[in-house]
Length: 183
Image (cartoon, rainbow, N blue to C red; front, side):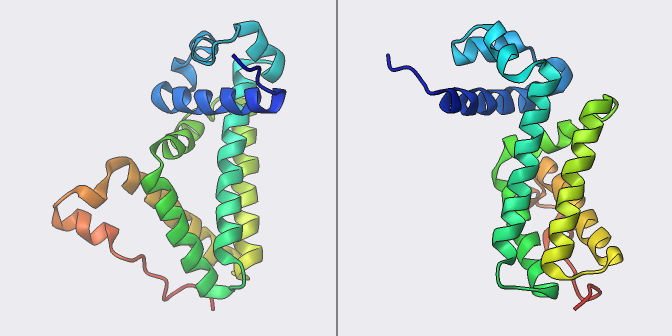
């Protein structure tokens, strides 16, 4: 069996950790389970990440970085409403198509009673705010509306409203209104 590089091992642990934290949340996930699935020792996980909280924060940071990267790519060469619509569409696809990603976001908000996790979520949310504002040129009110719709997309994806055959669900999943957003 070939040895993994330190970077490959770290990426493997983060992937397995994301799957486990998505499934059972911060409080319900054990580092022992993660280590066993990665076929490494629990002390090795702690050597890399310090604590379970540090590991969870690393997973959260990766998740927020994925959002920021998605927004950057989606808005490349665009501005105003066009940038917002493109970022919103890409985010909708991200949460709809990647259940692990969605659940990490939801579990991150749920674990905000832990001060260090709350700080990580605040920092990640702040990075999202800034990339939306910088790439679209939107004012504070418009950015708040945009991010509010993103939170609604999280809820819609968690409920899988796209597959629900109910009039209210169909009304939720139609294109999001952007006519009041800044141009």
